[in-house]
Image 1 (cartoon, rainbow, N blue to C red):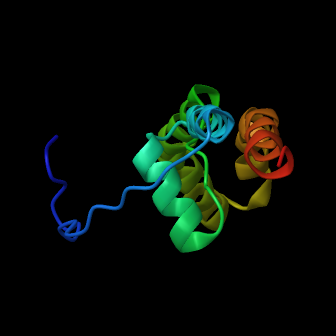
Image 2: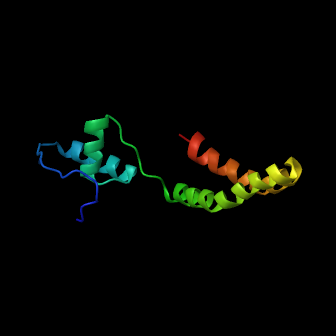
Image 3: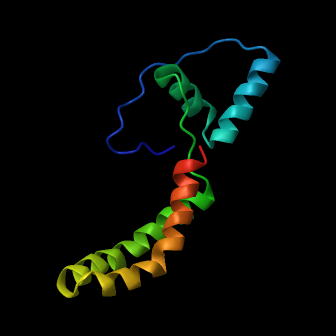
Length: 109
C-alpha cells in the first residue's frame, strides 16, 4: 500500500483477541462506513466515533456543487452590476438543485 504524503508513519502494531461475534460486528460496521477494518478501529479508538465516507450520491452532489460554483459567482457579479432582478432570475435555475443537495447532505443525518 502506498504511503500518502503528509501522513505520519505508523510505528506500532496492536493485536488482540475477539469473539466471532465481535469480529462479525466490526467487519459489518467498517463496511457500512466504507472503511477498512484498521481505519475503522483507529477512528473508533482515537475519536470515539466513526465518520462514514460520503456515498456515491453525496459525492455526485458535491461534484454538481463544484460545477455550479462558477455560475453562482457570475450571478453575484451580475447582481452587483445590473441589480438584483436579473441575478435572481438566473438563481432560480439552481434553487431546486441546491435545495436537494442541502437536504441530502445536511438534513438526512
